[in-house]
Structures are given as C-alpha cells and as structure tokens.
Amino acid sequence: MKYFGRGLSEQHKELSSIIRKTSETERSKDLFLQIHAKLHSSVASGTDKNEVDNLLCDLKQNEYAIMPTGKDETIAWGLWHIARIEDLTMNILVARKEQVFNQDWKERLNARITDTGNALSDDEIIDFSRNVNTEQLICYRNAVAQKTRDIILSLSAADLKRQIRQDDIEKILSVGGVTQQETSIWLLDFWEKKDVAGILLMPPTRHVMLHLNDCCKWKEAIRTKKKFFRS
Image (cartoon, rainbow, N blue to C red; front, side):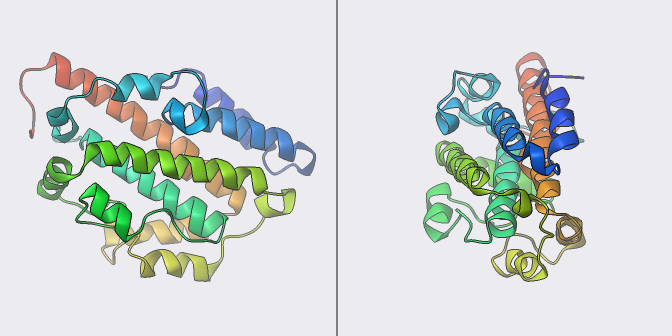
C-alpha cells in the first residue's frame, strides 16, 4: 500500500531511462534533484514543505522507538539506515571523499553503532531507537542530503558511467560503514557491481522511497493501533 511519495515512482522510472545518456546528463541531474528534494526535509533543499516534513513535524519521542509488528523496524532505525547508506555511497563511492559522519556526529547522535544497522536484532534496534538523539538524527540526515546535492551538481556524463572502485568499497568497511556479519557485508557486493548512475538510482532515491513509505505506514499504525510488537 502506498503511504508516501505519490508520483515519485514515475519520476524515478524516467530518471532510469535517461541517466546514462550523455545528451541527457543535465536533465538527469535536475530530475534527480527534484526527486531527492521530496525525500528530505524541505530545509535540506530550500523547497516548500513536503511529505517528509509532515512525517517528522509532530512525531513524539516514544513514537521513534515502536515496532508496530514483528515484521517492522522503528522510525528511528529507518531514518538512521537511509541516512547512513546515502552518506556512505554518495560521499565515498560517488564523490570518492570522506563521509559526513565522524566522531563529532557520533557523539551528537549518541550512537552506539557506525554501520547501516542492517544486522541489528530487534533488541538492538529498540535499544538504538530509545537512545539515539532524534533531533540530531534529523540534523545529520539534512547534512547528508545537502552534501548529496552538492555532489550531484559536480558530476559529468563520464562520472555517471564510472564503475565503482574496489578501494572505495573497502574503505566503507574500514570506516565501519558495514560489519562483517553476512546481513551487513552483502551491501558491499551489491554496490561494487554498480556504476555511479546505478548508485544514484538506488541508495539516495529508490531505497529512500521504500523506507520512508515504511515510516509513514508505521506512524499511521502507531496512532491507530492499541497493541504493538515492541515499544
């Protein structure tokens, strides 16, 4: 069921059809930025209020740490997961520079992990969600979004066709972006097979759309159901 992002799938399909065409590089970048703006708080792109603002504006602290059903994660985990993956892939794999996340952000976020959270157990997700500074989590995600937008503006047609480099994949592991656990490290194999265009079509766009849809679904469940799997 669709809870978030009406029309975004169609825009993403259009982006997929043109992103590797040299004659369409500037239009691809513009379209990416249009999609991306709808996937982040309006302050990150200086645009009008949007669905992400609506999702976050009235969330209560306890609502960030509720698993509505046994198949769900939490809103705090969802926001962390998409922010970390966008940070790692856009800054290390696409820009070939340093990620936004550092020791200062770790302390501000009160984060006990540095990876994407893929391998966390339910208990660990709940513990993370109860302890993370959600205000700083939103600030971190905004900082990642702003960096992504700067990176996109700098890309050339040749950049979009560049294959992801093995040393950059290894860097993600070395900085703690993934763990050695099977449910985490598979991400490196997935990303290694991509070119830059392929990265743009998944971690900072399609992947975010899917998880924000989940977050909106969970918010609705939290406010309409009386019993939850974990809270």
